[in-house]
Image 1: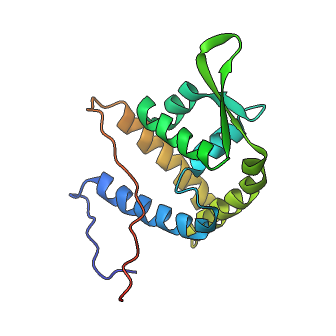
Image 2 (image 1 turned 120 degrees about the horizontal axis):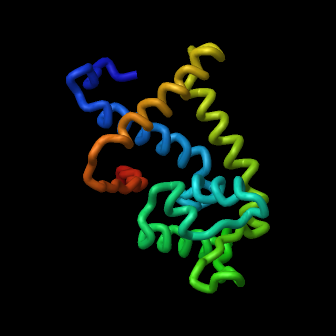
Length: 166
């Protein structure tokens, strides 16, 4: 743990949350790097959560708050890895339906184990009641922030290549 703490009540809360996000995704991608799917676990989990293991591309954009162009790239990436299939909705040919492949279904338990294990590690030291309050507090902060007037912003999570001495 760092001896230098940069966050205090005068520092934007977003900076602290960004540090947590960076650390979390760094640890999660390390645990699952052998799957070679970058950090697109949330998309696979979201599709799995839908009844039938498929959902529309627009639904994914809305729920995960990702713009259409970015989602197309992410779905293309997952399709090339053999984890999702894209098809047309027979009832509305303009709608793209994303379906998990057997390969994705087989690796999702490992993804869940990694996420759940990391969540347990991240909340170590909090008892069950504190964990419940923590998650409630996160939702409250989210709800409070999303009611504020705001500009649209985006950020990109990217794994930095390890620099090894030669």
